[in-house]
Length: 324
Image 1 (cartoon, one colour):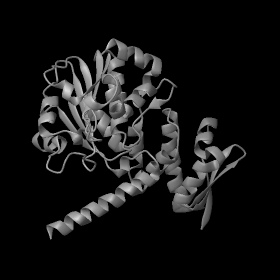
Image 2 (cartoon, rainbow, N blue to C red):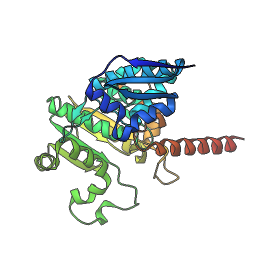
Image 3 (cartoon, rainbow, N blue to C red):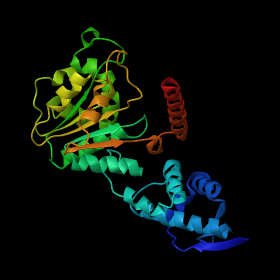
Image 4 (tube, rainbow, N blue to C red):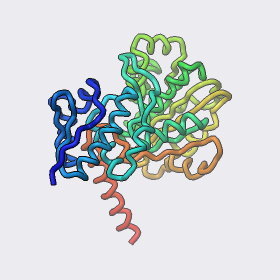
């Protein structure tokens, strides 16, 4: 039986967020929850079968809390909230409240999934954190956001970005330009994130002062890194020796985040990944956090989630065949 109910909370901003451009957000909710969302005389009215309308009211209540906390609703956040609703975990949406930093353009940087929130909490509470997961899960961007947060709070005096340079099979010495020019292509994702948060002028000023340091992983050898926030990106391309070297550089007052995707290793076939080995050796060591992000944490185009699922299914099938 079709019923009609009115959503009790009404605010102009919430209305704008719920309906979105050309009502795209409302249409997304209607499609997934089989109910109609209407705006009548300044009130949000719901039509549909009772169970669907009640589910929609639950969802709108949680989305309202998100909007109140300063979030902007988009397709990804709404679909993720619907997934939590179907899992009976809609009350956990509130865990996503809280801003890490605000970008130069005034946009808040926040965890968008429960997996990302756990990752951020681990970085907050550990000296070394491993963030492992596929492309689009925010592991690098959130690590940079946490570095900027620590820097702005004077918890560290510098940010150090490093990454193994193995993708093209080239030696850095054969690449043109000075050290910054040689390393730039490898660290572009980290640069882009810092540009977002500091703006290019301030970023370049910090780079000139050495407050932000960019260096290939090989240049970490022999150093002790005190009072710094260090990010090792693309760590799946480290050898076990490089990983051990990096982890033992940590000095007093420092924090490190190691990110990587173990399904995207570019090392030669006869080389073991230092990232894979480290997660086994260091399991349970106090002060080290470990978070594996999945396709559920992807915050890029929804097609990326489906691509990752398809590859994971294929790889699991191939692994099963080899075992047989």
